[in-house]
Length: 154
Image (cartoon, rainbow, N blue to C red; front, side, top):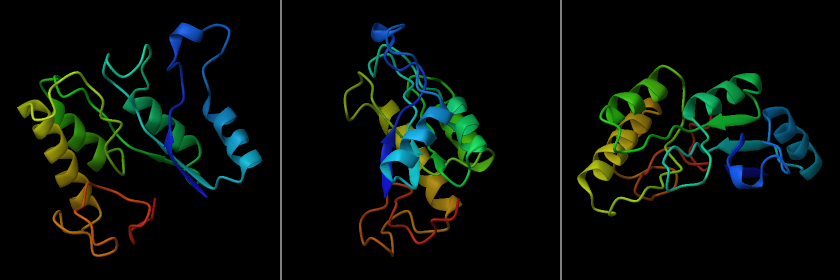
């Protein structure tokens, strides 16, 4: 089983200290108890997403601790002036396999959202050498890495 939507760290500050942040080790323990083989770490880096943050750097560090069990995605607030460069670095240099969780207060069709999602799709699709138009495996318009993708290699 694959859990495709996981956050760790101090995402929910309003419950701290009653509920301590989830560590990578605690996540692996929970995965083992529940029969989850792989989890996809989705950073969340915009203030509208939560009271806390889960940074891309934290997702990569956790993935590096358990590379056979965790897959890191990258995320960037599209208001960040170097959003496209950030995405390119984390996909090409740090091995992120996708983009998300993309939550922000901008209008859906805001140009900054378009730039960040287009950059992510372009980078991720190039990294798995698939067409950025239609994925041969899923037959869907490619939005980046997918669990059904034949290039599942981590």
